[in-house]
Length: 146
Image (spheres, rainbow, N blue to C red):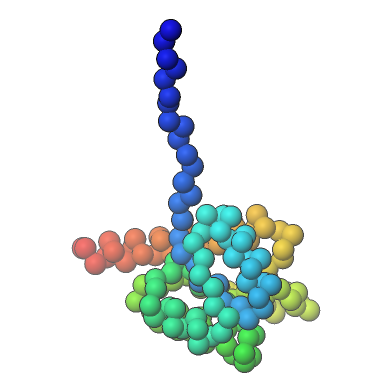
């Protein structure tokens, strides 16, 4: 009697598309957004304060930085985004908020409105920002080579 041959079954190994730094002082928001981003294939580090986020920006390289606007101070999110934009590796940046503004036309440029019931749109926005960053990096590299 011939023995059955064992064929290894390929296993799915998740690959991180890009590293994202998520900064929010609300632990629930951090957990939810981290879970959504990880489900989308992104590697996610989190910070609860601007100071913590700035330290992480100095020690790791991120493709995208998402920061809540209001944390330990009204300008904390802007400090994180400003610091991220000064980094040599130039991550894509966006402010996030879960509060719908009175008039969305007055929303600050680069601010994303996060609505938990619209996860596909959130992941699409994240992918677009990371893709635009990759395109800018490619153009810079091509200019340096020429």
